[in-house]
Amino acid sequence: MVISSDIIALIASAISIFALLITFLNYRRDRNKTNQDYIFQEKVIAYKDLIYQASESYELLFQLVQEVQDYEGTNEDWVSFYEKECGNYYKLGYDFQKVVFRCIPILPNDIYLRLDEFSHESIHFVTSAFHKNAELTITAYDNLELTLKKIIELIRIDLKVEKLNVNLSKRLE
Image (cartoon, rainbow, N blue to C red):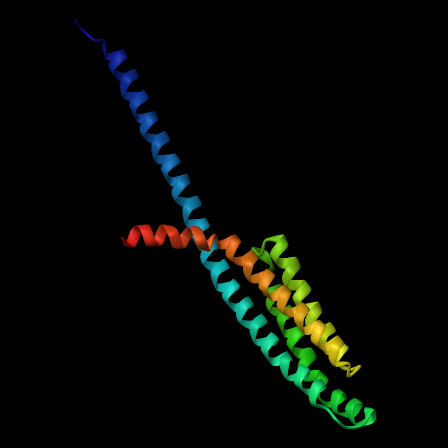
């Protein structure tokens, strides 16, 4: 049985095209994986910064809760104190908004909305303290805590932390 040179050339061409197709698909898959890995790393860094900033703001705002609860002076003295100190507390909310805006390109919409909600609640919290109403201030502070917990939960879901931990445990066994 003699195979003609045309058939051999056709088979060689088919093998070459198949090899080229496999190489191209491998390249595309690796490029997508590299981009996904990069975005994941950027998300982790952004989320760490956001959670740190939110937690720090939350802790610092507690000082205002204590001021409201412990204050025993006149209303006029409170207004004077508040006007002097409120700028520092408002700055926490506005600084947090800046961090959120820096991270917007990689934030899923639901997480962005919760982060935006937290920044607005922080600002509202400072405003609520002006009234020197301990109950109102504590309620606003509790709302901040609930929003912060929801943000952390959403971030853990987005990063699939539980699944990553299970896979890591299996790999280390």
